[in-house]
Amino acid sequence: MSSSPSDLRRGRGAQSHKPNRFEKLRHESLGEFQDHLIVSGEEDKERTRFLKIHPKTIVNKITSPDVGMSYSMNPYQGCEHGCVYCYARNTHEYWGFDPGLDFETRILVKEDAPRLLEEHLKKASWKAVPIVLSGNTDCYQPAERHFRITRACLEVFLKYRHPVGIITKNALILRDLDLLAALNREGLVGVHVSVTTLREETRLLLEPRTASTAKRLNAIRVLSEEGIPVNAMLAPIIPGINSDELMNLAREVAACGARSFGFTLVRLNGAIGDLFTEWLEKAMPGKAAKVLSQIRACHGGQLNDSRFGARMKGDGAVASHLHQMARLARKRYFEGREFPALNTELHAQFKNGQWRLF
Image (cartoon, rainbow, N blue to C red; front, side, top):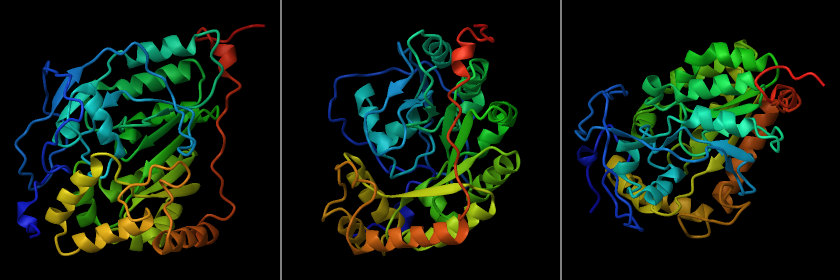
């Protein structure tokens, strides 16, 4: 029997802890702070803990052919935003945590990220290619207000005149408008803002600790007015939840100045299938069966499709209809607009953090 909406754990996406498939590593918290978004009506009493870790490198090579980036870096592992559908939840298991509530309440903090990035950019063998902040978890999640690691990394990118992409769904990015404007004057930055729904009640369920849709749209507007190129990520599209909003989402982000948009179909890989199903039966019990059925219809009868080239596009009638709507939206709202390539020519002249004379 489906649960009633009153059973929903508010303020979190995941509804429970889930077993870690590895069960080998354990961590002990070094401290915590109360500087995160408090959601109205939040019932969850499990405070978020922040653990400092010290990786040896920070820039990651991306081998997947369908994510649109070659290199990424993540100042944080785990994300307090709590998006229930997030594919990155599975990576938390490699650190000895579970992909459910641990992913939202045990945030690993890489305070050495700016230093490691600088060391990477100074390598004689490194040739400039855009590095994307947040290939995994959001670099502007609430913890960034306190730790300011993302801002420090942007200062390094500016010092070495290196191109950087940013993916976020948090309006906190506007705090760093000064650095973004300086980077943009030399064609060194592009921003990708995720907007999932125009309905605030849906956002609060899907993404409980993210910035409101209104704040995200305002971030697109402010960045665009500054001349900073913005691509809107209408992702993920979930059949039966926000799939009816695709055209309206495209229209709104275009009106705010976005130069392009992309969308992906939800895919519930690894442990996310169970987490999402548990959440759906509590958050939307009346439509749970229909939503899961439509997701399966987009992935060959499964909740997830791991095939490169197909996993984020889907197939079948529902997926085909969404792709047709996206083509129409681009023609109607984005004709003549283009998201620019970033400048990779300057970095070779700033290997030592200053202009190099040849």
